[in-house]
Picture 1 (cartoon, one colour):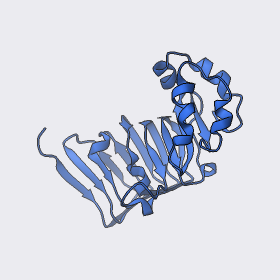
Picture 2 (cartoon, one colour; picture 1 turned 135 degrees about the horizontal axis):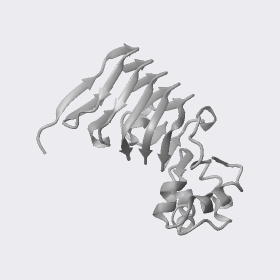
Picture 3 (tube, one colour; picture 1 turned 45 degrees about the horizontal axis):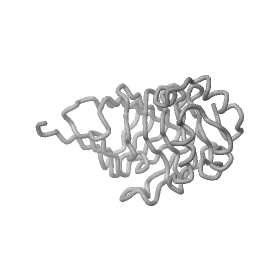
Picture 4 (tube, one colour; picture 1 turned 90 degrees about the vertical axis):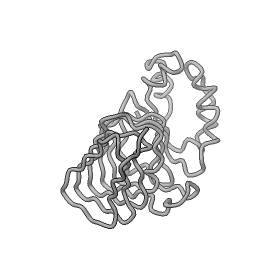
Length: 208
């Protein structure tokens, strides 16, 4: 792998622009002191090519053209009134004081994920009531730590109960919501989305 070109967006305010972060040979730095308002951001790079520290995104749209996996650095960004489209797996959003430098910028409110497909994504330290989550086949567990005993009281399909539900109480303390894809989880645990739905429907702490 050769040298990556650094592309830095920092110390500026950008409005009403379309930004394409799609070059596999570039390392994109968003922040510090970056503010994007009413922008469209096209993302087609892996998590390791996207570094976010101290950026503010207001009323902007993120179009994720390549599945974004395990990108926790959203917790170093302030997101307000933003919309996400595309596939995100293992991504965290919000306020997570133990995460590391830059966490003090982390916040999320009034954001819309209805056009996204989320799996293993969490809302940290922020009120999930202001968030619009994707509908079925995605489902969102609210207050997963507090509701863990209740969720453990029923049988979940496949090994999902033993592996995911049994460990909910081990999630980081700020975890306010956990969104999963029944399609992805069913494939992983050799069951069906329908079997997930039969259990999901029983809980008022699960949105779907």
